[in-house]
Image (cartoon, rainbow, N blue to C red; front, side, top):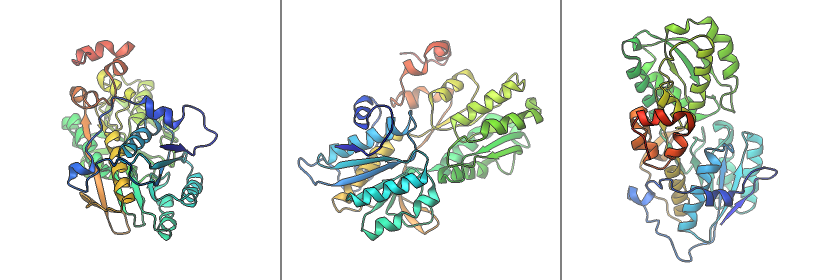
Length: 371
């Protein structure tokens, strides 16, 4: 059962979204990691699990995370209730939602914060009521939580950096790079940049760098590009580090407006449809594919374990500034043009019809992508 506690929002209900999302890979569960069994129980416990997302992003959070989390928990625990909250990129709103969930008797908090540091201050309130907290997708920073379920974003950054280094070839030694960082309020963004700079920081020449102020992603990027790109010799830009596909699209547009005849290799992440289409067209080199369905289902399995009094052994750890925290990481994959078929399409993350629509039909055929 799922109860959406999102008020004054337009669009389909969470229950409708659960029914609408089909054909996406389920991913490996806790049982596959050798931890406690998560076989469904015919009657099972009655429990409330609060699930918090930071943003209603149409092609991610409410389309993928929410339905897969709810579906998997319902499979394991038909009598469990999911109380769903969306912070809509407002940490104060999310704070109030967190407290409301505690007052309603939530027994596990699965928490993806708007702001990694400010959101962590709520952990103490959950602990005071002996309610475990799963840090989901983003890391709650500076406070001890029970578990993290996420992707290893430091490794994702390294994947981005390594891919850009390979694409730049000889220019990776001293070549000019535009570098854009995600919001400092998002722990994932900080780790992405850190990982990429581990690979590239000592070799490339960063000629222009921008950091999104947050908490919203992409804030100010277009304005900064409009002011900065004309001051650069676009033909000398050998590479672009972008933390996301949306960012890469903005940079490509700005470089074209400045007269660039050919775009330099650019990184991205999230495997957005538009990003993958740019990869097909040669306007973006790579994206980091994060199998969100597997992440959401893994979080549901862990929540079920906690509801039933089990505390499985984590497969990894992470230092969140408050000590070493137990963590489960879902593997990520570099997707370049030759990898689209064997990753996002094979997993059902998106369909050939969606990717190859209209203007991209020929690009798909050239890349060997057909129904």
